Image 1: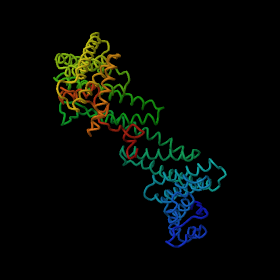
Image 2: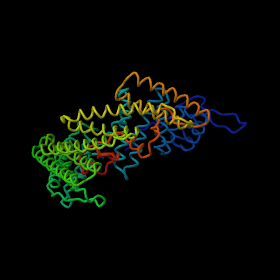
Image 3: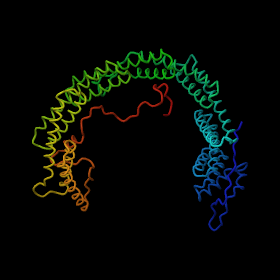
Image 4: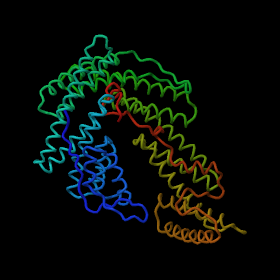
Length: 524
């Protein structure tokens, strides 16, 4: 049985073809090409049209005719490209004809793929239906589009139901393990679901979808419950043996499968009960891991490592709360970790304040800036600590005073000769100090100084440009402040100490479902 396909070229006047030098051009005669396309040599017609397209590559009529010739030659993918370009660049009539032939080409591509890739066939045929459907929305009386739509719909429904039944039967094979059974039921359910979308009125598709939905939910729930009931195994990282951990991957997959089962069959309370129990077990495991990180923090002497370990523990406590909101053990663990983080930040702030007791203005501003950052984070973690606002206020005032002195110092030209590059670096340091001071304690005096420094910098940069030097443009990067070493500069450029665990930017779990069992083998 073949689908009706109109392989008729679209007549166009004066379609120029390439001619040899000195030989007059002869218009491309569609009447001569039609017999080649219909029952002769479509490749010859394609060659002639390609010659005309070299002179007029965006001619929509030529592109349409090329699509017809390529279609007749069995080059369905090639024809699809030509029809698509003709539809985009042509008028309404060309666009409608192109869309119709795109549907035909999609059908042929799908038919050619049936032996090797049924999913590819389904994809092409669904696209063919969309093309016909668009035509029918615009013109319900288009009999050719309607006939082809019904033909492709019937073929698509046939293969979907046949493949769904094949998978459903394979799932009942007693030799199939749980993984194979879930995969077969998932495929059956999805094919039945696609069939109901193609033909909502089809009884076999609706009944098959409902039956396999229930079977799939039960299979997922059974396997998910089994995985969730497995005892947790210790997992050690050879690169970080001091960091304790559990292998929660089987439990996480079990939770995912139960979530998918609950989504498929939300009316079954037993699945919801098993899901809640599995989530609580996973939350318990994360809380235990978080508590072990707190134990490790107590044995860690260095503040930076303490912060890192506590952040990892807090991340696990928050993950537990994602599983079970308002879960008391997780809330208590998170609150204790926040208390410890605040303590470490406050202690570090105190250390930086002590280090700021130095006559070196650059070192003062660096230490006070870091102290203020630590105090602010401690206050965010434990906002009810009465001593923190006072420490923050005192440190901010001391930092503002140090920044003002540093800016005034850097605004003054040193005695003796100063190189142009050194002058630019000095004023960039002053500009940076003034900007930070304005952010802490805005004032007209600081704004005036900043404008003065900015004007001086512009003049020096223009001088450098005339001499062929390339100082960085205003606002780009961090200027070097005279008197500071490279290590001190790097510490200042780091900004406030982070209070969240750094992560590599990796994508999360892919797929529309929660478990690997439901997402495996798919391209998301």
